[in-house]
Length: 359
Ligand code: SAH
Image (cartoon, rainbow, N blue to C red; front, side):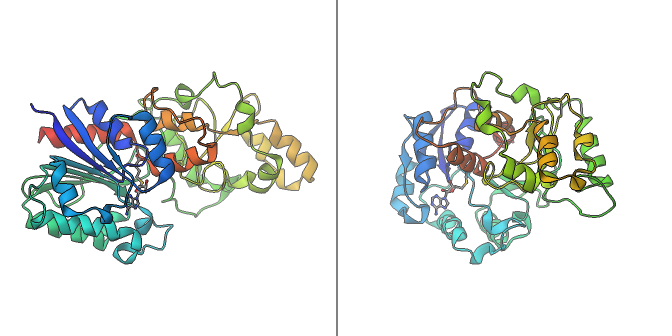
């Protein structure tokens, strides 16, 4: 088989490229496109031989696309217009413009239609007008397609794989082998009695169930014990005092965490879990009656847990990035969290690429 010529759109730090490599499908990324300078520096650092076009997709001319003569598109359009937390601007959001431009090119303007297309987005996309527009285009072009809402444990991600003629139209759910215990709890219901911290009985029960899935690896397998300066990741006292009750605290033996998003390490609530580095202390006993203590005692209690952020490398490990993925030296920790929060699970995509090719 001739290596497939792959166009990676919205390439970010190259999650799709790593997935392609992991899939072992004979392929070559003939161009990656992204406008974000930081993401592009990281991409170039790891894939120095891949042509990277630092421009907007809508700024590319039809001839630019035609020249690339690609067989496959891998793409992750911006998800903010579709997230539940966002304003759900959908097709009216300016960030969807480039995607609509791609849809415009597909049916008739490209001199050769790509044989395979894989699109990744968030839950919320499957009910959007952008998705309707995508399906309309795919039907016009006689693509066969399949949609998936995939949940590593509870977060749903939206995927679509496409090839030549129509097939299933309703989102399928797919169980993928994964060793990523990361899940988001954006979907959580806030109801029931609060047990400790601000968690309800239902929430705790759901977490207990996630944790009991023995096929999922423990967080400790992804930790960076060799990192010399883990102290820089400890939560500062001010953050502990203000946000203790809102944080999702996990221990190295756990098999779950919440999804790490791009504000991680900066905003605390809902951006990712924090690690309890000292497990000699019982979490429940620290949090019981915490509110009744003076600030000083409260802090003393909380400090015992040695709560720290996961390092960017640990998050990359959880997302399936290989050990040879690195950041250029000058990229700050905050920037690393940001770009990782935009990326994807490499193992999941690699599985989908194989599935798409095998159809
Ligand atoms: N899959 C990528 C991340 C995708 S996030 C990864 O593994 O890192 C969406 C990316 O699209 C961001 O990096 C953003 O900079 C880029 N982007 C958004 N709008 C764009 C546009 N109009 N043209 C090119 N890139 C764009």
